Length: 414
View (cartoon, rainbow, N blue to C red):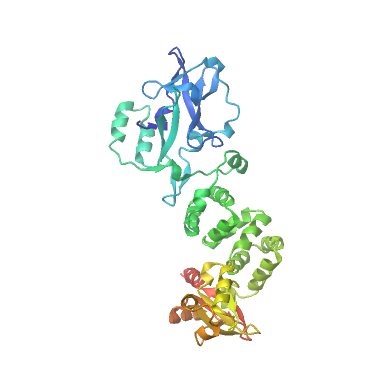
């Protein structure tokens, strides 16, 4: 069946069982707790006030008219509108997240699709209109005859988003929980795409969406966001939630973030963190921001030269750091001094019983903790590196700098 535009339904007449006009449509409601895709009720403006008419008591009659069963005097009043998702109030002219298009858009209209339902009205939300059709239809409503408006909008290009690709934004935490508005589909996007979407939103909307992400996704996303926005988002969270997210971040990124926060806020977050993660981050905070030690992460793969390929594979399987750090296994002696490096590709092509010392690339490329950004960039460029080990004054492996770190560094210098 053809779709019905929400803008056409709003204000349309509602007839009672005898055919008399009982009122006009004021709102169209969804109960996300029951079914996030179907219209659950219509709010009708009557002489006696606003009444809530359930969908099962409605049927279509003529062109965008509703006919209701039952006595209009028995229709219940609208008691808790905050527990309903109202399409005009909560959707029209509001920003939504287009998960498929990975962007933020504004809703101009909503297309509803009638379905057969044993004689009662069943309307399903099909798409949201984010193009000129919906805007023109609403602009000309009541000014130009409806049939003329429809002939006009049919000539305009269609720009809609299927309802299943829409993520709603609700800034009130209690109402978000009550309406079961979640962001599971958004969380499945790449963190860089989520970051781009968050940067398009207003502060209140951004914080509301970010709060709904689990710690792992939030941590990966915050690393992709502009540093100034990172600070704004983290400051909006309570210290316990912020600590949970910072613990999931790469240590170098976590140190950069905490270094940008006010000292009091940073200390509150550190106090809430687990001891091991806190110690890693505090060590990195001691180093200069524009030095190799300030750029490095302490998440890396290290093994003895006497370890076997099989041992290295087990090490890789149990590694909990970021994937950008696992392109190389670094070899260290009993004093943790850097003595070699084995690219991951060599591990994959070697028998499991071979020792890592026989696969090492000599000599390993490295830099000191005090190396400046320019030196780090030159080494990456000269040797086409994915990771660069950083050693202390005793030659002990302190951390690694990843290609992602260098890209971020170069962005900062633009």
